[in-house]
Length: 504
Image (tube, rainbow, N blue to C red; front, side, top):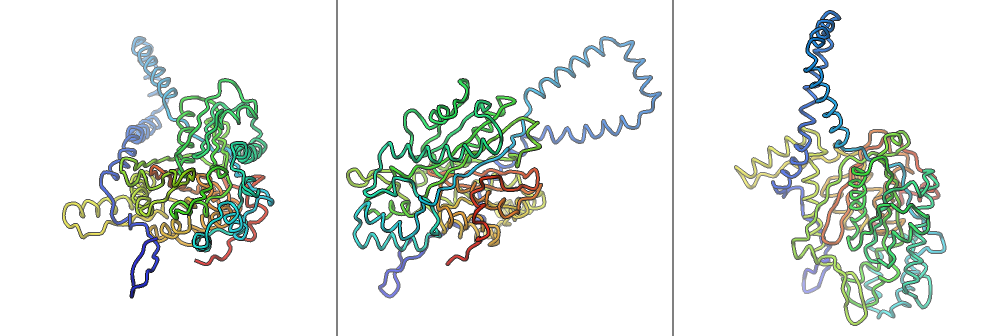
């Protein structure tokens, strides 16, 4: 929010994302085309192979017989050609990129006894920190404008009076979400935990020793040579980073499964001070997590839901303002919290601008790319007042999973990218039903679309999330079939109630 003065009265105005689609930088377009050109050799081979096939189809039996007779008298040529063919085939098989399939995923559903509606949240805030009346009024206004409903969940530690933000309670929350999601995932896929060769876990604010990955390995008695990774401090966009890491590992380790789990831990991260920039996260973040099973086995294509197409990551950490716009720190003695900068929306807009400018050449139709590129060059060379053509990303994706970080973020992306209310419905309903579940939110949104029966074979899905650092990361998936919701879908018991009408 920012202050403006009108007739001597201070008026709060919402901060907005910059109009990033109309202020792109050429270097990021070049980066996207670099990704495209990196596959140029494969694209060039397509017409060559087509020409060879056409030529071969025109050969008669006599032509083939004459070729065979010539080869019989040229043994050296045959041997050399065969050796080159075998060597080339081996190199291709060993170095080619493997398709990454999403077999299934599971989102944690908080039980009813962990529900935290608006009334309960305000009672807890009063008891937990003994906030004064101005602070309580500030929290009340944030909650009213947050977009959160009365069905969100909070960890067990926040259902105790007095609160107990201990290490044991934080472990309890982590185990509750991790094992709840993973139990559902292993049951729905019929994959044994010992068959998993790669494990990636992400949690920004809770990193005990032994690690969360070790807790999972111990619980499910996973194999000793598993490749495990524990990510921390990477914010709400780290779910895409975890997917990217698992993808890279699956390119190296053939015939393997990878499990990715991502969550955020609230128990020890409740801010009890009075600094307003740190109080906002208390209002938005809620209990949640997801687990994904990825595979590079071609045999799993038939039962998989999606195929991973692209991952594009943007990091703006070199900029000092971007680096500190989401910052965990101590404010007053012993009162830790995450501070949200007043420049957050502008920084998020710049990060998203960079990300989609890089992503565009990979996903947009050629017609959109030409229009965009021509107007951009014209603006650079001839007239700075020329507005670049705004690409229509609705031609590249059928579904949008926008990180449900807050109502303002969703509002601004809907406006800037000219998205219809239907395209942002999953994001709004996820924020309303589950709150800001950090890196998990884009998966609750995907589950919403499946529960609504909207996912069709060939549909393309764009997941985009923001995180501290500052980062903006995108993942693009392709639906391999008409996707039905899996058993344990977090919306299965309430999807008939949605969408609900929101006071925007």
